[in-house]
Structures are given as structure tokens and as C-alpha cells.
Image (cartoon, rainbow, N blue to C red; front, side):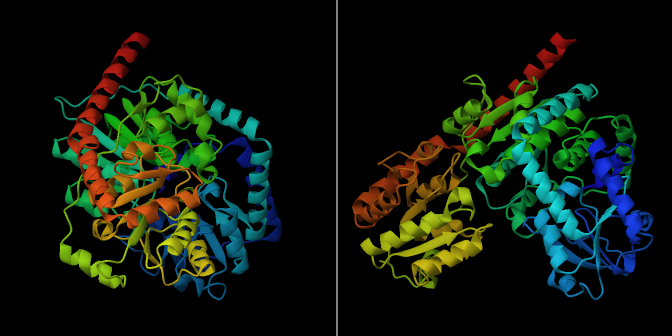
Length: 601
């Protein structure tokens, strides 16, 4: 998204380091004489640029444009293709692939340098793209993709080698940004109804995304003004939960995709005043500005952010916009246990946020709260705990359950073990398959169902073949009928390396599917150990297989545990109780911020 970030770029200066690199690249481009021919160019962007902007930057309209969504008002004469920015390397449609290099040999990126990965640069080089132009900055840069990939690798290595200085740099820049933010006094709306904004990466099928929907819908039902902004537009899999919000009448969009002229004019006036802000954390610059722009032109009383990346972006954007209360929702254990999610700016930015009077940090499990406190060096109790709300879905029709079992080739007696998980390293889907392989030796007629998608899908399919489980494991991808699948299953198997408060365990118990899970993070807080589910050691493949086999071989025990699980979930994760606690947290946070403002004054 970039509608607001582009407006800011006209007034804000680039960092000195970027300007030095950009001038070298410009000099090299001049020597090599690399003109930009729009008719041989594909524009990649995460917002839909108007024609005037393209004419100014390119000198004409491009041959193609790759966007992560379908535009409402396509430009005449421009061919469009879908851009997938959630994979590395990012890809565009096969129709655009066929145009390279015969019709297209240049990429014009309206994405910033930080958002275009080294692997993406290598992909373009292999496709015979000759040059990549970065047009967002006031210094337009052209570079061969192979040199761009090499530069990315060098920067990544430098950050690893100089991790300590990099972290201190980010902490210093975070504090400089906060000190430079102008004080803004946002008038509260009269009455008890709040203006609430929720901010998250996407509306994928994850637990945090579902909790955001539950929270926002309950608040809308109470009459609050609720909006949802996303780091990525809700297209395809990223829009899995969008129908829930649309049905509730909650406006939802990617931050910075709204190019209404009146909003951009207001932001234009604001961004002139903010042009001196030291936004030196370049990876965060664009999403921070886009969310800040949304909050400037339509202020909120409370901004609640979900997951680590959106938490940091939301904290900085809310501070720039002067949002009275910022809630940072920590939905897992700290990212130190998930290196692929950990960025060098997370620890210092969280540390700065923890010292702000208008910031509330809350986890969804006791284990998660204590782990973040230890990671950040915070006092015990600094991070609050607010459990997930479980809104029971409608009970599936027995005919649908029976039909699903038939589709899986199962009779009414066939035991089914199910996993509902993202195919990513922290969920350990390969370990799930290892457990199934051992379980099959104990229960030869077992069938396994794996629901979910993610970056490890190819590895999962290869591991299924390696273990000879092609006739045992059913890979279903992302599904909207999870209640039917859980109702048709006997055991839920969770093999995660780290967890906050896993919704899959809660939902499985509600539908009578007994969980067997690794004892990590807040897993033990989602069930009654040995009464409604079984927990095993984090790496105990044999123990997980044995526990699942024992449950499958003892239907009376399984039935008793299923009954205990349903009662526990109804009591522990009651949505009315969690909603009341959430709104009490908001009121308390706003009151603390008012008191702090008076003392500061």
C-alpha cells in the first residue's frame, strides 16, 4: 500500500546513506545510458497509481502493471496482472511471464527498495529483465537486477555481522522519531462510543485474524465506530475472513489503498508538517506512513494492533498520528523462538513502546506474556493477559459430516487424525507427518487430514512421498468447512514448536475432537491436561504417536474427554466475558493516557 507514503515522499528527504547509494547508481546509469521506455516496462506496485503519476515518472503509460489486487478503475491501454507479494521471490501472473523478454525487458518498481527481495531480483535476472527502476524516491534509481541481488545479499550479511550496532541504531532512531512527533490533541467523540481501528497483516485463516474479527464484530454490535486496516489487501487467501467483517458492516481495506482525492489533499497538508520526521527504519517507513495517513485523516480513539510486525508499524504510526490509546496484541511467544519472523528492529521498538504511557501490551496466554517480559527485560506483570474469545460456529449438519468422511474414503469406524495448522516452520508440519507415520504402525487403518497452507507446502508434499503416506495423508489446503472436518475427526494433532493460545485446540474440543499437542507456549492453558486433551514434550514424536493411538483405541475415554472439553471451552473462553474485559482494557488505557497527559502538562 502506498497512497499516503507516496504523498509524504514529496516532502521527506531520503536517508543520507540511501542518497549516496542512489547517486552512485544514477551515475552508473548515466554512463551506461539506460533510458526508460514505458512501452517495454512492467510497473510493480502495491497501490494503483493514477495516470498523471505514471506519466510524470515514466513519460508514458506502461505496457503492463502488476498489482496485488484487481483495480476498480483500470487505465485504458494497460494490461494488468496479479502480483503476489507474499512469496519470496514475489511473482506475477503467467500472462506477464510470457511477455518477458520479448515485449518487456524493464521493471519499474513503485515498491520501495526494502520490499523487493534479493530472490526477487535474481528471478528477474534469470527472466532476462535488463534493468529495475526504483521510482518512489525523489532520486530515481536504475540498476541491473543481478547487481541488486548482490547488494541485497551484502546488506543482509552486514546486518548479521553487526547485529548489536544495528539494534542500537534502530532503538536510537525509534526514540528520535518519538521525540520529533508533534503533539496532537484528538478530541474524543461525545458519549461512550469509541472510534476503534484494528490493524493486522491480512485476513488469512490464522487464529489472530479470527480473534480480530470476533473482537471487531462484538464492538460493532455495541455501536462503536469500527474500522479494519491491513498491511496487505484482502485478496484470495489473504481475504479468508473478509466475509465475516463485510456481513457485520465493518469497513476493511489495505492501509494506503484509498486514493480518494479529498483524503489525499488533507494528508498532503499534514505531510508537509511531518517532512522532518527521522523515519530512518526504512523497512517500516512505507507501512508506517500509510497507516499514519489513515489515522490522520480519520482519527481513532483506540488503535489495536495484532501480531509483531503490525504491532511495531501500528505503534509508530499511532504515535505519529497522536492516537490516544494503542493496544499491542502479542499472539504468540516472543519472536526470538521464530527466527524467520524476527527483525532487528523488533526488540528495540518494543522496548521503546513499553515505556510509552499510551501503549498497552497484552498477550493471549500467561506463557506468552511472561516470555515477552523476559525477552524485553520488562517487569513481571507489565504485559497483561486477555484470553481468546471462542464464538461457537453453527453445529454442522450430520449429513455434511458423513459426506466428508466418504470423500476421504472413510467408513463410520475409520479413525481420523487431523491437523489444522499453517504450513510454516514454527508449526512443524513435517513433524506432524513423522507422528502420523509412527501412528500408522500402531493403528494401520488410520487416516490423516492436514488443513492449511503456507510456505512449506512443497516440502510437505515431498515428505509425504518420502514416508510413503500418499494413501494415508489428505492435504486439503485452506478450507472454510473446518467445523465439519473437526466433527468428522477423532483426534486433533498439534506439533508446534511455539504457540500462543492455539485456537485450533479450543475449536477441536468444542466439536468433540480430542487434542494431542506439544506442551509449548500457552497450549496447556487451552485444555485440561489428561481430562480434555493430552500434552507431550515439545520434541516427543514417539509420545505423541502413542498418545494418539491410545485415544483411538479407547472410544469411551475419548468420549468422556470430548464432553469435558466442550464444558471447559464454554466456561473458559466465553465471548461475552472476553468482550467485557477488552472494553474495560480500552477504558482503562484511555483513562491512564488522560492522567499522564495532565501530569506532563
